[in-house]
Length: 327
Image 1: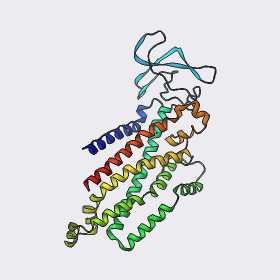
Image 2 (image 1 turned 30 degrees about the vertical axis):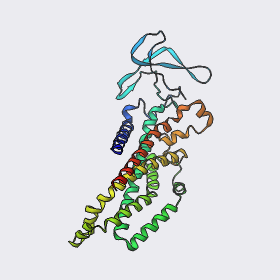
Image 3 (image 1 turned 135 degrees about the horizontal axis):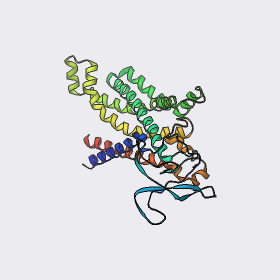
Image 4 (image 1 turned 45 degrees about the vertical axis):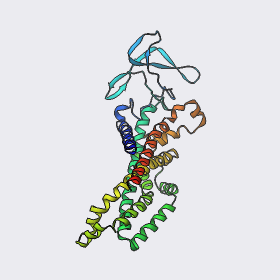
């Protein structure tokens, strides 16, 4: 019962976070490329209900920003901008020339909160797509190796050992070297998914192979074969249902791993490039020590990634514990 509650809680939490990222176009007050060059590295906005004179406002508002003469900003109490909801087809916003940077702005005056939501689309979709590629390959090759055995089993398993020995980072560097210097976001996304997902099929394939080896010796499988059932029928009717639990558990392990891989590669400049945001290339802006110390809100992508990755790991642990109890 405890594991079931943990699974449901993790799924509900992940569903809420993924929904927020998917609805970035509605929840974010600005577009990911919208720039306000007059406000580079603006601090996070302070939502207020009390104005400078102590008067209470039913609707939250923000003050305007003005340079403080020392490279920073101060609140301009002469201009108050109420937060408007369902504003210009977005959940909230403020009238110009006011700004509402909930998590501050970057060096180009772009809203970090909006870019975190849009960047989550890139990072999470990369993780999901790469996990789908890995599990599809692992499911197909693992079932083929376990069900047919013999030379095919040896070929797939030796190929898996070779794939594990290949350093996927250097493989990505080699592939990237043959491409043009500047490639678009769709091409970079496809490259990431192909390299990350194509190199991670070995572990799920081995686990699924073990299930298939056990399943093909079951009595009801032998009986179905004796009645003339085809290999395709046996795989579809008996082996696939037995391997789906393993595949689902592996998905919860692979997705956070691949999200981290995308963040690392984009951080190094090998993934999605500007102006399209991802959590990796956003964190790259915080590489310099002085920028990190002066503008700690630039770490917002890492703060956003942590609960999602943790929830996936909790879900994976709960699913594996449930499988052990079921076994």
